Length: 70
Image (cartoon, rainbow, N blue to C red; front, side):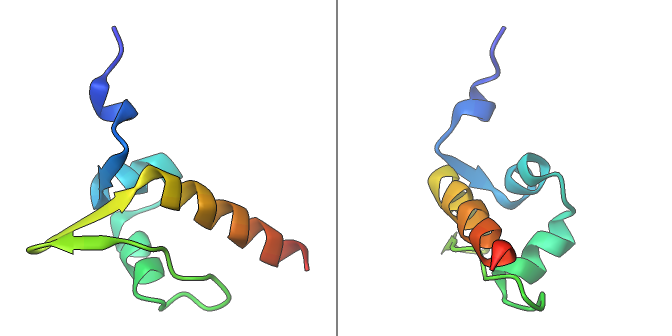
């Protein structure tokens, strides 16, 4: 059976951290631009919830990979 949470285009902070295989704390630091030499990850907030579009994560990984190559 396929878990529909895995296919959602919008992820919570917890889901995005699991997808990236990093901690929620580290992802929060990335979002807030506190990790040196790593571009911030785009997100939006609904109240106190931090939500991240899956496509933004994919774009962020590509841009981070391109910067690491340079």
